[in-house]
Image (cartoon, rainbow, N blue to C red; front, side):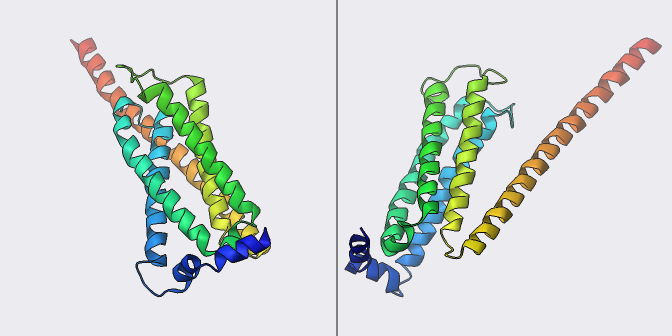
Length: 211
């Protein structure tokens, strides 16, 4: 197995992509990988958050139009990721983090497929609000898999276990802070909107009583 990986790493394709100073090779491949990840993970996460009740006033059916863009991002991500793998196969294919990343991506893709079949293949004219617990569980699993995939992908950049541990811990702290901050922000905004809506109602009741 090691000899096969070393052979792959020494092929002309691998050495050209790795050693060439041409900006249209490694830097461009890395840019496409990042952009593909942004479109695929971003749109997928937005749909999952909508299923969980974020922006509940928005109808769910129009999100179907984003699926072609999301899968296009996945295509660019898969092609560019394969080329990046060819550059350093002896590194990535011997790391546990890399296989964790692949499994997490497979889980996220499967969850996206389930949500598409359940809500976008034949979109209902009226979206149930809130959505069934099963759909919300799939949405939570989608966000979990993306968090795991991104974290594992970030860890593959380091060879030092200490650096990997620090990166994983930092990622977990930032993720928890963002989730907690987002939850507090959403609850606060809903409370402010409810309070603003209650004021005109109380004012109208007072005027009616005075008459």
